[in-house]
Image (cartoon, rainbow, N blue to C red; front, side, top):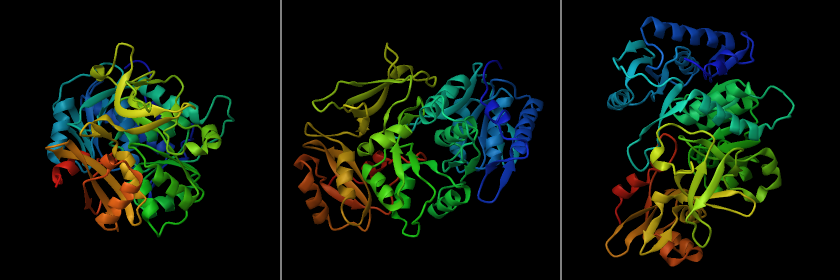
Length: 459
């Protein structure tokens, strides 16, 4: 394989061989061990005849072994195919079939799978679209392009000329089988930081790791932020100062609750598996624009954005032209290189981007557009409501109508309805309210709205 290889982020990491590089709750490994183990994986693949360009599925629990297996696959010149450790057999088979997996690495060792597909030189790994509106599709990231995706954010957070100092550890609360986990692991390595990996997220464990490793900034999905807000037993996250929210839209109300409860600023970021993070916050913006809490920030260097077909309020389809993107998006890219994100957004006078929701989520009630996020924010203000989702369901007369789903100790329907009618235009008020123990979410933390609509048709 020629050119840059993401494995070098581990092999050439600035930590000495005897320094601890990867931590879990009950295990720490040194940088030297990690490098040796990555090389061992690469050698084992080579001995098994898994050469450059062949796909290798890695299905391991979150932890040091998952990190070194990923790097080992790359050292062998192979293509990394992450698979969730809890994925059922049928799902594993589907992934193997779609990607032409030649071998699989599990806790039981290496097994050959027979796939013969050879990927183009420079292909680093296979990821999947979110699948919230259809079957997930494979996309392919190149080593050099993904490095740029890392650096565009690192540059925004640590501008050129900033004093060089060792960063604190990076806490990874995501699965290493999904883009958020891979991205934040590689981001830590690129920044020269140690890595703290959670096998799975829980509020008490998160708070304990923040205190134990003195972590001042981290990333969290919106669902985890909501869990921390709702856990009365977790009252202190010192010395945490900033949280960057990724993977799914974050409710501004949850961000404000997090700030009020813990004194920690939550800064939205915006990106997609296919294009990386393209919009976010800098430390300077956080200091200068506290009133913009809830926006996803401003475009990163080298990223162009525009709004397609804006309405009277300036909201329209968010189009993004990043310096690099995954392979396999051709049907979503226009002649000028702009990717249709499928999201509705507006840009304010200071250049901050506000996400209104997914194009596919907008509810057309008799010709009137209802953005679910607006209604959800109103519902979250009701006493006892912990979280909310609003979806459109079929209606013979109006085409679609909004139906609400709430979690927590929500008040009576009449009280929810009164709250909505006091704030919203009548056509935005839900026609029904359902109570759930939890909202169904994808692995990335996105609410599965189609699942809600199917399970609860309109009255």
